[in-house]
Image (tube, rainbow, N blue to C red):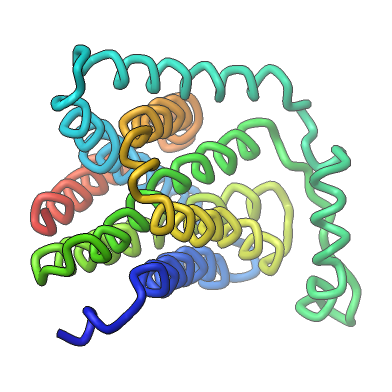
Length: 287
C-alpha cells in the first residue's frame, strides 16, 4: 500500500492541514454575508446549526470515545469522564470570570490586531482600516472553547495516524481518513460560528475571517504531538476528551443556544436539530 511508505507523522501533518483549511473555508463564508452581514434569521439558524453540530461532536466524538478508552482501565470508567468533564466546565467558568467585558481593549487581543493591521488595510476601503469593533466576553469564551475543543481532536487525529507506525493496516488507515473528513466537515461550521459574532460586533470581513480560521490551527500542532507521542497520549486521552467535551457543552449552552433563540421564531431550534442530526449521521457513518 502507498500509505505504508509514508511517515505517519507526515500523514498526520497533511491531515491536520486539511482540517485547518476547512476551518478557514467556513470562516471565509463571512464574505457571503454582504456589506450588511447576515440577516437575523440567518444568524440564528447558523448559531443553532453550530450548536447542534458541537453538541453532537461533544458526545459522539469526545465523551463516547472517552468512555470506550476508559473501560480497560483498572478503576471505574466514569472517573476520567467526570473528572475531565468537570475540569473542562470549571476551566471555562474560570475564564469567564477572568475575561473583561470589553475583550478588544486587552493587551493580548491588541497585539494580535496589530500583527494583522497591515493585512486588514489591504482589504479595507481607500487602504484605511474600517474596523471599530468591541469584542464581548461571550465571543471570547466561544473562541476559547472551540480552540480547546480542537486540541484533543487534533491529538486524536495524530494518534490515529501515529498508530500506523505500529499497525500499518488498511483498516487503521481508513479509520484515520474517516476521522479526518468528519473533523473537516465539522470545522467548516466552527470557523463560521466564530467569524459571525465577531463580524456582528463590528469587525470587517478580514478580521472576522482571521479569528475564525485561527481556532483550527491548534489541530495542526496537537496532531503532530499526538502522532509522535502516541503511547503517552493514549494514556491521557480519556481525560483530554472529557475536558474538551465539558468545555464545549458549557460554551454551547451558555452562549450559542441563547443567541439562536433571541426571539420567538423557531429557526434556531430547527438549526440545532439539523446540526445534531448531520453530525450524528456523519459520526456513525464514518465509524
